[in-house]
Structures are given as C-alpha cells and as structure tokens.
Amino acid sequence: MISIKGSLFFNTSKNIYNISNLRYFTTGSSTSTSQSKPSNIKIYKSTTTNALFNIATEDWLFKEFDTNKQVLYLWRNTPTVVIGRYQNPFKECHLQKMDEDGVVLARRFSGGGAVYQDLGNTNFTFLSSTSTYDKNKNTQIILDSLKSIGLPKPEASGRNDILIDGKKVSGSAYKQSGNRSFHHGTLMIDVNLDSLQKYLNPNKDKLKSKGITSVISRVTNMKTLKPNMTHEEICDSIINEFCKVYGESNVEIEELNTSDLEKIPSLKETYNTLKNWDWRYGNSPTFEHQFEKRFDWGTIDINMNCTKSVIEKVKIYSDSLNPIMIECLTDNLLGVKYNKEGIEIAIERTKNALNNKDIFNKTPVIA
Ligand SMILES: Nc1ncnc2c1ncn2[C@@H]1O[C@H](COP(=O)(O)OC(=O)CCCC[C@@H]2CCSS2)[C@@H](O)[C@H]1O
Image (cartoon, rainbow, N blue to C red):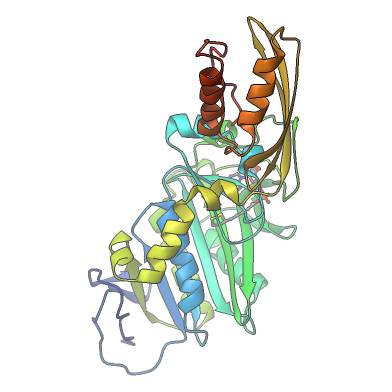
C-alpha cells in the first residue's frame, strides 16, 4: 500500500475501506505511515455540512496545498445559497424567505452565479498548480464518474455546465492566483427544487445593480434518472476516476471537520470572515433600489443608492401631508445597512424624533 504522511493539522479517525479495486484509508493528524512511493494525488472529504466551514476549508486548501500534487476535495452543505464573489445577494436571492427558513447565505471566492444547495447536492473541487490545471480533464473525470454509475449521456455544455437530456445537473466556477488554481462544481442528486425556486431569482426588477447576474437554467436532479443515487456513491465514483486518471491505486482520504477550526488559526480566520455581514452582504457591488410602500396616511416612493450595502443616497417622494416626517426619514436612512435591521433603526429614530407617533405600522420589506 502506498501511504502518505498524515497532515499534522487534522485529527480524524483512521479507517481503511475499499472502493472497486482501489484501497483507501481515511486518516487524521500524526497518523503518519511508512512511505513506499510518493503519491502525486491527495483527496480530502469534509464530514461537516456547514457551508461556511466547507468554503473556508476550500480556501485554506487552495492556499496550502502541495502544488506538486493533484488534489480533490469533496463536500456538501445543509440548505445554503452560494453566491459568486462579485454578486449582489439582494438581487440574486430572496433573503427574507431565506432568513425565515434558516437558509444560509454564503459568498464564495470564485466568480460566477448563484446556486441553491442542500444535502441532495454534492460539491467537488479540483486543486492543482496553474501549470498543470486542466479544466477539460477535470470535467472528463466528472463525466466518466457519472457514466460509470449508470447515468445516461452526461455532456459538458458551454463554459460551465454539465447537462443530461438538455437539463443542467452541474454548474462550475474557477479561481486562479499565481501558480494555484481550482475548479469547483455542483452535482444535483436530489436537491429540493421547490426551495431552489423559492430562494433564487426573486423578481427584483426595481433593483439595478452592477456585478454578475446568474444565468438561469432548466435544472434536473440525477435521482430522477437513477433513483438510488447517493452522495457516497458519486463521491466514490469520482475518487475512482480521479485515481485512474492519475495512475494511483492506493490513496489516502483525509477527513475534515469543524474541530479543525481550533487547530488551524488561518482556517478559523477565513471562516469568521465568511460569517461576517461585511463579506456576505457588504461586499456587494453598488446598486440602486426603488420601491413603493403604502401606509394609511399616504404612499412613499423610496429611491436608494447603496455602496457596500450601506444606504448612501436617499430620495423619497410622498403624497404625505407631513413633509417633516419624510425629511426626517430620509436623514435617518442615510448611513444605515440595507437590511431589515437597518431600516428598523431608521424608522425607530424617525418615530423618536416625531414623539413616537406610530406612523409606520410595518417595516417596508426590502430584502
Ligand atoms: N445546485 C445547483 N447546481 C446546478 N445548477 C443550479 C443549482 N442551483 C441553481 N442552479 C441553476 O444554475 C443557475 C446559475 O447558474 P450560473 O451559471 O450563473 O452559476 C453557476 O452555475 C455557479 C456554479 C458555482 C459552483 C460552486 C461549486 C461549489 S460551491 S458553488 C441558477 O439560476 C439555477 O438555474
């Protein structure tokens, strides 16, 4: 068996198991073993379904992986909308519904559009040196792994997608920095399509934003074509194809989980950044939002310009007989965050300034 020094950082259980004719073992910290021949690949699998941890781990791997190796990382998340690095979540997702239902918003480091994920979605990441990075080779590994478990005619389409029967089952995105590159993608096995519809692409025609707009596609779950398909099955199949392509028959799979946060300070730092409002929402391109809200005392037509998701300019038109209240609200909206709490703060300040009259019976819905 080819064995590789275990990472000094991780502390996971060591299991040996077989997939097809390959022999794998999962390993953790200091489980170093004798080395007969250095391997040119490395495989990681997250046993945690926390999207922010998994994306932070991907970034940590990206910065730390041995560029002499080809690296594969497999992971999946509980319900999350993952937006691209340069996207505006206020435009791409229905943040209010996500909030109500406990769906996480994550902003990743790669470009591209917004996807909805839950445990019915498997993610893969291929990391390699930029000089050996080969997107087509990676895509072929995924296509072959789908074929080998019996999925009919998966095909690469356009720059980013894998389709079956003309419907998207996988979307990809990329990142490169110096001699480090990665290519990651989704695999829709059994994603809740009602949720996908519910949380993505709200009708925000009045929100004008710079930045990247998602490319809406017709999607399908592979489980409709292969009813017994599972996350474990597709992971094993990808591992098989990956090993085959790089000529390895015994590999180490390192399992990762949130206990690593306490062992790797830079991982924890990235995790904390990813959790932060400033990264997830604040990092949005500038945008303008116009909406109307009717109260029993009249209608307001609000026009806002936001930078870093903070309201920077406001113009309110109203048929209210109380222009002072409108001026006061305009002033109080300036500088607050473009979210429910920000608007509530502005309304509260306006009410206080106007001797607590209950002029706003409900916070205008903005997100
Ligand atoms: N889970 C999932 N998989 C594939 N396609 C999806 C998914 N959810 C939504 N969609 C569809 O893709 C478009 C957006 O397509 P678009 O091409 O704009 O963006 C992408 O595909 C990005 C893929 C990012 C992959 C990363 C890998 C690890 S974490 S996220 C959306 O409007 C839906 O129609």
